Length: 465
Image 1 (tube, rainbow, N blue to C red):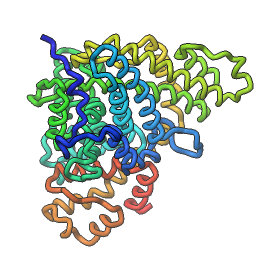
Image 2 (cartoon, helix red, strand yellow; image 1 turned 30 degrees about the horizontal axis):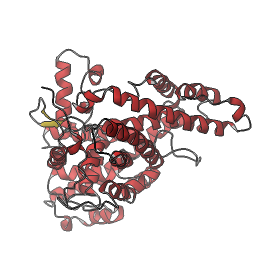
Image 3 (cartoon, rainbow, N blue to C red; image 1 turned 60 degrees about the vertical axis):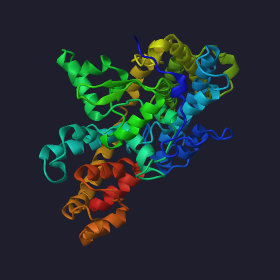
């Protein structure tokens, strides 16, 4: 018999820190969650983190904070559509559509909160640096078990985001932001550890699937990992509270099927970064008006009359097309959710709503153009090269502090004078370090939490340039 998740559990808005506390109907927990995320320092720092186009002298280009707000807006709209439909189907109680929308909205706000500076190239830079150090196998890197090494050599912003909201921010070392179970569930795209994700992918390779095709042949939630081993117990409690379907991986560790609302968070992200990348590409001069218009018009349900837009400037027309295209994509994703509903509720859906919608082919065309014209733009390539060098210089610069801390048996008060000065100069937070594993995570916390600008500043300081 196929297992099925139930909305009565999936919409659980209880918290780890205050179990059983009555919810204020005038200000439900998912609204409080959104407020906590919005006012947090990691969220605020997204304003100076690269999205796709490099941050430079053009105030119209998006950074990760704007992207997160836009994704949350789209997610709320999509959540409202799905919520109302669930009401009509008798799947949730009447009046709970706003709850679905609010949970998705909060999860969308947090979806990029763990990403390091310089976009996805930042993740790659951190991963490469850690891989080199583990290969050398000395000092802090000597005795870390191979499964735990994966948390660093394949550094993942989604797992770092989970660490931020459940441990680091607000109630540090206890319950973090203490977001409600449902919001954490909707946020968690990859509900497994690094070792389990790697084991699932290796098992598929052992079946004869080429390594570069493995991710197309496995469960969507196994393509990456969503929590670190240090936060496993926390996630397991969340999964139990939500009634997520539990499985056992090839490594013998538990993992879970995705919360159904993950599909909506992922769709909102896909819609925004694909469509607004085109708008930003036009603003940056990488794409022409005609190129962007040709890609956006097929997404629009009721095509605009060119005569009505005749007096508008090109950028105003593009903005109009973008708004209508997002509306069309939201509706298409909603229809796809309904079409795949049974598989989603059974935790068996491995697609992406926008790709499986009637607009899937149009979005593939957009990705193709982005890959050929936006992601290889000289300005972006220069940023990636610079970002790699900056991040490596920062990691090289702070490593002596952690080496010295290891030599002091993790007593920060016993650090040598220079390392103490460096700790103060960089405002390094050394609390909670009691092992090599925790030390490496604090290093990753520090670097991944930087803005692009601050990373450059620290790189200059530690390298003396």
